[in-house]
Image (cartoon, rainbow, N blue to C red):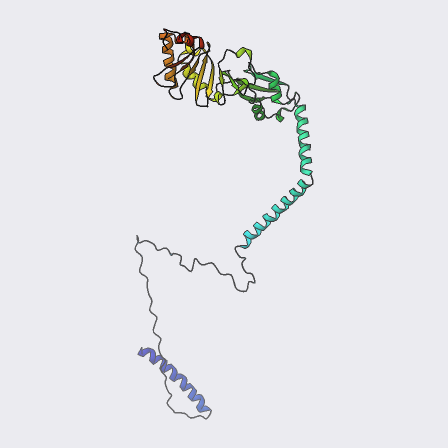
Length: 345
């Protein structure tokens, strides 16, 4: 430090001496000792040397800060502001409403003006003409399973004519009309392209004859009326009499069938107050069955017939309504004989 200060001081003194000579030549004062000024020396900056990283040390990866995740602000002075987020969906919804309103309004005007009906009729005529040219028209109606159903009744139920477009025929509606026929229990209808309709029938089986309000009709097992008449060919069937008798006749006949020989002699079954039955046999005897325990009473009658031939006697009625007891009513002639002297009464 001292040598550096000496060099600076000497350089300054030399400079000052030269000035003194020049000033002396110019008439200035000479011989004054020049003043010296110390110049501060700047300290050399300290250097920081980074330590070398270890060869296997993990490398730090800079992570994003909260400031990095912020949205980049727009530059000042650009003159444009970002559009609000709600603006785009609102514009889309408004456009859709405008288009939908236009379509609806146009459709309403077309409908009110009758244009839609006329366009539909024209398209239908064109379609029918095309089907007729292609041969897609009705030519035949075939029926399977028909035994007693009248053919004319089936054709009337079908309700179409030869030459009608095959696709104008509705199988569902035809089936509903056919199943309203008395003999038909169920039906299926199908179109068979190009020109026919096939009908498959399941007919009802006659079960009994039902007399109600002075009229006798033929019924099936479920009580459905087959024909509203009393055909002679079915007079061999037993007859049930009274309101509601047709609905419960099957239950009665199932129990009577436990004794088929006795059941074969039943001609009429009369429903009494919609609670119980009176049976009229082929010889005119009335058998009064109870409301409860009807089957047991019927089996007891069969036993009496097998042991005592009770049905061969002069009886008007056999009352089985009391469990374990049998009451009989004699014919007038039999009753007169029983009243004669010496006869048990």
